[in-house]
Image (cartoon, rainbow, N blue to C red; front, side, top):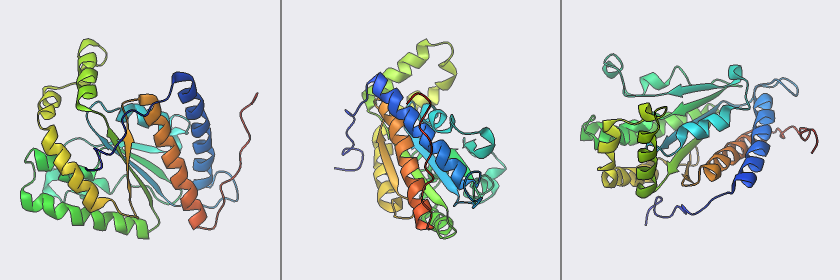
Length: 258
């Protein structure tokens, strides 16, 4: 039994409860983010916040990211999507392209996919040789430890769905003219390699789930549940970071009419 097998994919929220809890966590995130950015309180800049998303194709990463950043002013968060490295980027160390968008003190960045591609897609698809991807675990761990020592709060998500659920979402996308662009021949081919990806994932969790940068595997069969879980996890991480620096989260008023 690995981390993926232990994930309870039956967890769900009904629509009304999901919307209520999501709104509460979004409002809480807004207050915490303003505090981290020194925009409320005494102007103190809180530690950098890096939120990293990985997951199966069609697992709901985009929807979860959208709910995460919706309550925030666009000036207060940076969302970066990483595709396959360009020809020029391949000339450099694989971590090089992830440096520029990292958040500084008082800042927040969200990575839609990340440097973990070295030990996932590049490993499984053969884009990195065995020596490169095996070396990648220690390189990633050292990179994250360095960020942690400098003060960065790192929150890492893997959005987990079953093979059957992914197939249904693919088929639904294929039938929707406004979502067909999200589905490629490569996505269908990757489904055939799911066992290899699962093997790579379990090694990834074993090698890179550390106190400085823990993994949270989110059951994502229910999109409502996954979105709330993401917000709750990020908010809890911010609170821990504030308290580690001797700060208490600033209280904020309830919504009008509540």
